[in-house]
Image (tube, rainbow, N blue to C red; front, side, top):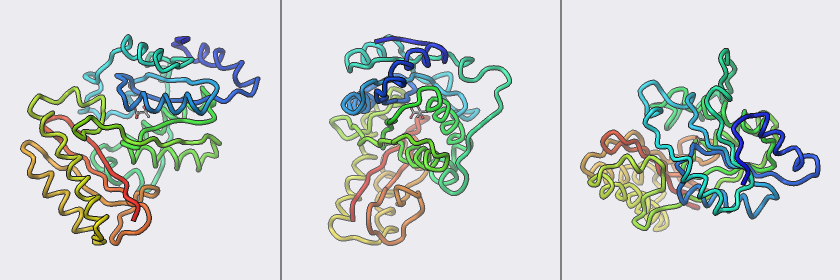
Amino acid sequence: MQVVHTKVELRAALKEAHTTGKTVGLVPTMGYLHAGHASLIRRARRENDVVVVSVFVNPTQFGPNEDLSAYPRDAEKDSALMRAEGVDLAFFPPVEELYPPGFTTYVQVEGPMTATLCGRTRPGHFRGVATIVSKLFHLALPDRAYFGQKDAQQLAVIEQMTRDLDLGIQIVGCPIVREADGLAMSSRNVYLTETQRAQAPGIARALFEAREMIRDGRRDAAAVVEHVKKTIAAIDSAAIDYVSMVDPRTLGDLETLSGEVLIAVAVKLGRTRLIDNIRVEV
Ligand code: PAF
C-alpha cells in the first residue's frame, strides 16, 4: 500500500491508473476505521482496479461546540486495516493541505435536503461534507465512491451534489454494519460509557420494531414514528433529537407509506450523539 500526504503525491500516484483506463474506487473516511469501513473498502476492492482510501477529520463539518478535537484518531490501526483489505493508496492529508490559508470556497446543497434531520441541529455540517467530498472527488477523479447508508442524509446530499454538478461519479451506498447486539457501527461509539453502551442497542431495536410494524401492514407513518419515539424515550439517558420517516432520496417527510421508506433517528446518550436508520420496502 502506498501512503501519501499531499495533493501532488495523490495525483502522481493515480496518474498511471487514469491514463491507462483503470477504474478507481474512492472510500472517503475520517479514520478510526471499523468493520463498517472495511465493508466499503471490500466492495470498492471488488468493483475497481485501484482502491484509494482518504483519512481526514474534516474541520469544516464540525460545529463550534462539537467533537473535532476529541474525534478519535489512530493512523497506525487504520493503516493496518487498509493493508489487510488490499487498499492500493492511502491519503492522509494534514489540514493545511486541503484548507490552506485563504481558503474561501464552499459547496452547498441548498434546500430542505440539508435543512432537515441532522441539518437542523448541525447547521453548516453538510456544507462541510459537500465541500470536502467534492475536493476529494476532484483530486482522485474516481469512477466510483463508497459511502455508508448509516449516514443516510449525507448519502442523499452527496448523490444530489454529484447529479447537480455532473460529476459523473457513481455513488455507491453500502448497508449499515451492526454489532452483534444491533448497535450500528460508528467511530463515535468509543465515547459511550459502559452503561450507555449497554443502552445503545435499544435504538436499533426500536427501528427493528418499526420495520416489523410496517411489514405487519401498518401504513400510518405518524403511528410508527410515535412507537419509535416512545421506545427510545424509555431508554435512560436518551434524549431524542429526531425520529422521522422520509423518502430516502429526497428526505421529504412521508405521511402514508409506499415504495422505499427510511426511518431515521438521532439520539443523544449523555454527550454522545448517535444516528441510525432503517430502510423498509413497502
Ligand atoms: O462519513 C464520513 O466519514 C465523512 O463525513 C466524510 C464522507 C469522509 C467526509 O468528511
